[in-house]
Image 1 (spheres, protein in one colour):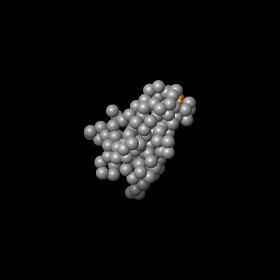
Image 2 (cartoon, rainbow, N blue to C red; image 1 turned 90 degrees about the vertical axis):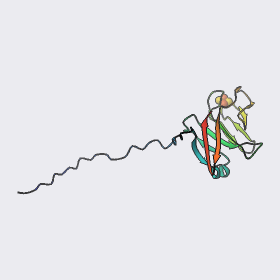
Image 3 (tube, rainbow, N blue to C red; image 1 turned 180 degrees about the vertical axis):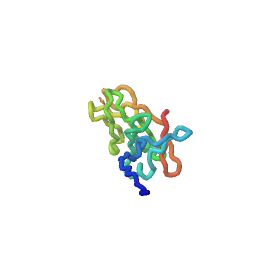
Image 4 (cartoon, helix red, strand yellow; image 1 turned 90 degrees about the horizontal axis):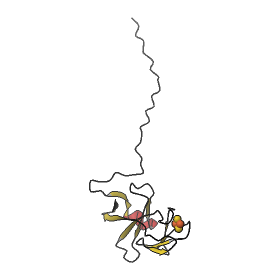
Length: 132
Ligand code: FES
């Protein structure tokens, strides 16, 4: 008897469906690692537009370098994304010129509400954030 090898060349796509690498899973205490202190020191900020609770910007507190501030970078005027201006030490919105202080409060309109903030802390070299 001749054994016929079945030619099963049906091309099953074995490409694994990768979970979105945008959102690191939150830990059981609700905190998510968003970067390292080194990243923060090097770039002056950590940005994660895909953070589960909303687009995130983490900076050093302008008045106390040992503290961190994490804000939702969505401008409270009409929803553009604010940018951290390291030299001016404020968040600036490119759309209509609103400015926010390092703690998220309004420095200049037209926005009238402060940026939303997140709870932020460090553990060793990791920067962790949790929605407030
Ligand atoms: Fe930011 Fe208008 S959307 S100032």
